[in-house]
Image 1 (cartoon, rainbow, N blue to C red):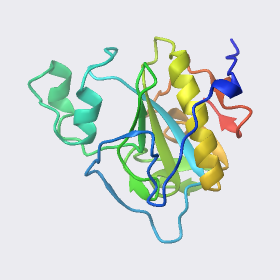
Image 2 (cartoon, rainbow, N blue to C red):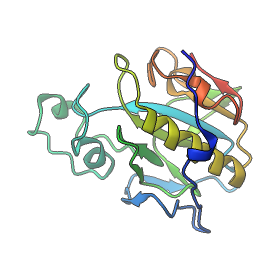
Image 3 (cartoon, rainbow, N blue to C red):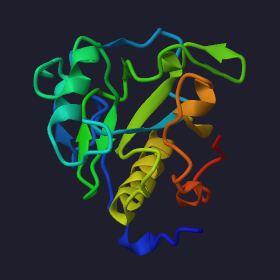
Image 4 (cartoon, rainbow, N blue to C red):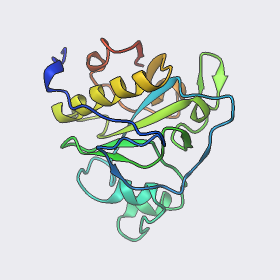
Length: 194
């Protein structure tokens, strides 16, 4: 399936001098630090997450990224509540865009990773999480937001590629999964799905 994106209908985003998308809802994550001095974002990593797994719309992802996840709220949370992770952006099923970390800072989204011989992808990437899973298609509103966001980021930074989390962490990660439609980004920049 090829996803048709109406360019005229894409929302416009503004990136301020501090690295925040003005139109996004800002929820600052403590799980971030400075990028190495020589690193500028050149890679976009596409992720998928839902908490609890395969359940959409709840506060779990936001709580995980802000270290406020209650381990007793769901059995799955008992093993992950203590993780210290984040992403720069989270796009909900309805297209809501939430930003947790400035694009000028390093979010903790990629973990042990490598791209084109470079390890530690967090150093030089921007992480975008989509609310989703491996077994259900993503929503048109998410693709629209993602396309507009990637266009904005490509204009601001020397972005060279967009990749799946599973591509930079093979065998360890599967997201964004087989149902992600990479055609939504094909006119913007090179993409490397699984």
